[in-house]
Length: 105
Image 1 (cartoon, rainbow, N blue to C red):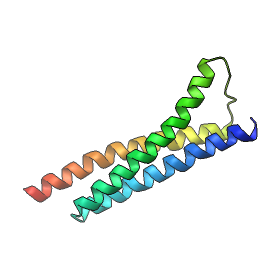
Image 2: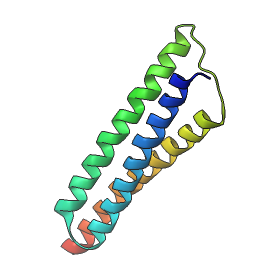
Image 3: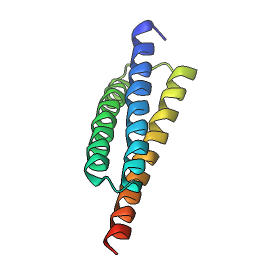
Image 4: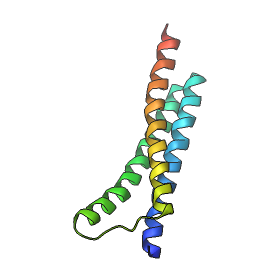
């Protein structure tokens, strides 16, 4: 894996890590009843996740076009971060909804 491929893995790690952090902070904001902040943080998480997916999609397209993407521990680590970020965002969406319902009740 050349340096450019490592950079792609690190891009995924960075964007996914930021997405996960924003999602978890959104849950905390919703728990505090600050839904405006929760919504803003959730939107940040979605934006960072979109950027991570763009990098991953480019790698997937390259592979499908006949340019194999070398697999190593950094890429596996990046995909792990991406998966955990997806879960955090999914949980954030649900928790924000639940906190809103709790406050409305």
